[in-house]
Amino acid sequence: MTAPAPPRSLPVEDPGTHRQEVLVAYARVVALGAVVLGALCFFSWMEGAGWPVLVQALNMVGILLGSAVALRLAEQGRMRAATRAFLVPSVVGCTWGIVHAPGALVAVYVLGIGLLAFLGVFVGQERNPGRAAIAWLLTYVAATAVRVLEVVPVQSTPLDTVTLFVAPAMLLVILVLAGQITIGRLEASQARLLEVNLGLERTVAERTIALREALGDAERLLLNVLPHEIADRLRAGESAIADAHGEVTILFADLVGFTALASKMDPLSLVDLLNAVFSAFDEQVEKLGLEKIKTIGDAYMVVGGLPRPRADHAAAICTLALQMQAAVGAVNAVRGTEMDLRIGIHTGSVVAGVIGRSKFSYDLWGDAVNIASRLESHGAPGRIQISATTVRAMGAGFQTEARGLIALKGRGQLESWWLIGTEAPA
Image 1 (cartoon, rainbow, N blue to C red):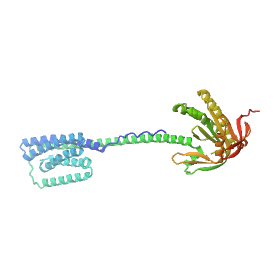
Image 2 (cartoon, rainbow, N blue to C red; image 1 turned 90 degrees about the horizontal axis):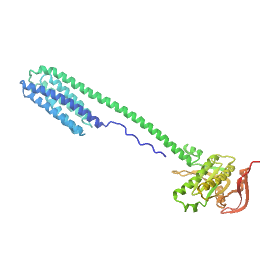
Image 3 (tube, rainbow, N blue to C red; image 1 turned 135 degrees about the vertical axis):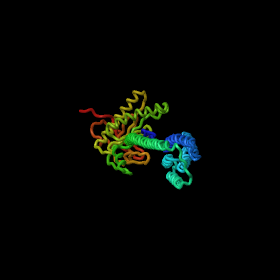
Image 4 (cartoon, rainbow, N blue to C red; image 1 turned 180 degrees about the vertical axis):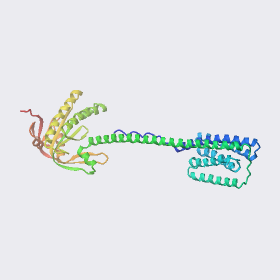
């Protein structure tokens, strides 16, 4: 039976990889903003602004260094450490900027802390992402309160006018880049989902084909073990099958000389020879519409008249017996062997049914089976021995020769005949 193909690995996106890509993109955007804003703060300080502006410039340096460290850690796959290295200096810098930044720079810091909160929800605290966003929101509220209450004085500089134009431009750049990152991530996720769906569809189709092939193999295997009608009844849910048949004809055949031949042959040649003989028997059984029951070693058992009753069961079995003799002769001629076939045939009533759970077996029971077996074992090599009931049931068209009464083990005296061949048409 063909085993189903193993499932293909689907292109499912790893959430950790997704978070890593987003963090790297955000770190690059913030690093760019830190460079520009840090330069503005530094020049403001050079123009005479107080030390808070210089501190803001140093904050930008800290944010830039934090972004660089975060990028390095993210490339190594250390996402938790990378997130902390990026967010801590960024949040501290934004908070300080809200408190101390002159002019329009405050808007940049406000937006910065908002973007960081959004980033925290996306890649920060995996177990409780909202907690980080709420913490940063409270930080922003506290810093804004300090600014509004003017707890710390803010010094204006001549560069405030320039900052008023540069800051909105930086806001736009950060918004556009952040939007591109978010949209790009959504498009990438959609593409990955589409690829996953296609992969799932391919896998389902492949599994369906493999399942159909496996079911086909199982069906063929079942039909090799059981008759079609019996297999259909098992599939329909019958758990116990036992049928009485009033009249059937049973054939037992045994290869005489095969045991001695087996001692002189290697195992592969022996099995090949037996397979050639039984395959020829199987072909004739199928052509005549009979039912092979089993093989035991070099013995062969066939029945006619079940599971579908037929009126010519005895004639069909007798025809098969003659064809089996011819088949053994043909194998002897081709392979140079000297095997004989001893056959016994009897007609009578039997019970047929299925036994076993894991390995099904369709078998026959009854006195008729025992008589047919005894007729084979008490027969002669190269000859077909049949009972009186078979002679009466097979009808015209066959040549027979009376053998007389024979003593069968466990049965006493029984009248038997030799089946010679078929009669030539008049």
